[in-house]
Amino acid sequence: MNDLNNLICREIKIDVTNVCNLSCPLCPDTARRTGRQQAPRLMSFEEFKKFVDAIKVFPEQITFGSKHEPLINKSIFQMIKYLNGKREGLQTTILTNLNLLGSVSDLLESKVKSVLIGADGIDQETYEKYRIGGNFDVVIDNIKLIQHYKKKINSEYPKLSVVFVVFRHNENLMREAEAFFNELGVEVFFRRTDFYKGFEDWMPLNFRCADTKINREICCAEPFESLNINVFGEVYPCCAEEIVKFPVGNIFEQPLDEVWNGVKMRNIRDFLLNKTVQNSGVACLFCPVYKNNGCTDV
Image (cartoon, rainbow, N blue to C red; front, side, top):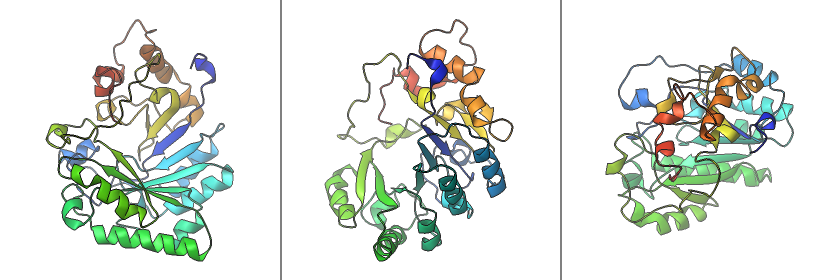
């Protein structure tokens, strides 16, 4: 952390579409949650390939899906396959609600390392209270299908995990959910929701994650470790909805390495290290994580 000139971006989170098939109440896509109209867009394989070819120093991990459903983009497996051909040992992850699996063979042939599945219930009734428009049985069938074909070809990948967001209505189901998904060979991670508008009505009464406020020199590590990219190629230092007006670059216009080491990213890091005199325009000022001095469950 001391030498800011030699920082390596450890993870890229990229949305290859701006569309989702569900309507979750606390969706991190502000436009979707507030009912604003936006034209659907899919990142093309050619755009993605150009972005990847320009990377000089690859991160350790690239995650597909942040605020939207990556499996809507039918080029995703081709993208992952291309990535794996460019960098051996790269950790590739798909973050999905797994209602739209598509081709299992394409998934396995892409050599994606892990699939993180958002599922917050143990049946349709508890699941659809938050994952509005989703089908719990379809998710479970798709998990079983992937596990079946992995076994058939004797492959340990992709590793399947469930991200179970703990709300007020499902916090009493945690132990049952862990047993349910473990029976399918799936690990479960429990977490609380982000601080999106209206989160107070969803927060569990008794569950809390371990306090992630760490004794460190900054309150937020994300701008020192990762980048978020939307379908239009715009780059952000984190996934907070408060920063959508503050892109730090665009991968369709400049190489990722230039964005990572650019003036805007350096200014954010300086600000978080209390080195910046002029703070105007720094997105962190509007972020609840910064306002809470790093105290968050995310």
